[in-house]
Length: 224
Image 1 (spheres, rainbow, N blue to C red):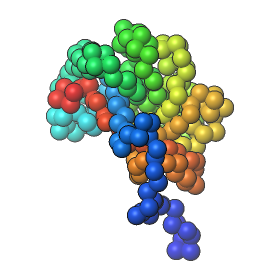
Image 2: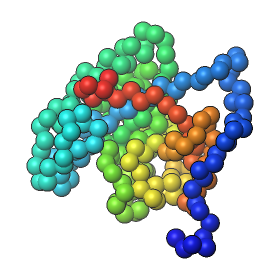
Image 3: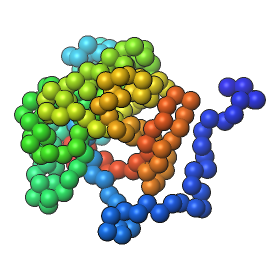
Image 4: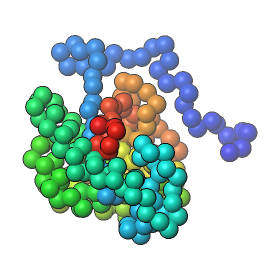
């Protein structure tokens, strides 16, 4: 970035003049419940990765090169075996709708969980084909994963995803989402920004995105 270039970040937003969101029935607060389903799509040498997972593991682990971290794997397995089902039960008993942020590889490894999501009628948003850091992933590979994530959700859930949230995006993430013909028809919002409330469209040199706040119901041990 040159000193003469315009600063690309918006640090001002609505400022002291936030708009009236006009939530239904005059509500003053709108809460969006989100259930992340990532288990089985994280870094693991069993998945062809060079190291184990280290993010959001609750065990403070560093990535282990060329090795499995059984403690981390166990945390993720708790999510798919127990946490997911407990949270789905709670939501069902209280008649609360939610959005599921679904990692494609995770759904493929647990068809029973995918079937439960389909039965729930919950909105399903793409969360990436993998639960990995796309920061250094080539744009062509990330684009392929975006297409794969849409295909997996459509096939296993029975309906196309209506939104997108990449947990660990790259500088290019918004571009393939907005440019890809299939992605542009499959999604209505890419919610990768968290810079404002109420929801608002945020432009960037790459593409526009929608900023929304949400409650992240993680299913892994210690976070449910």
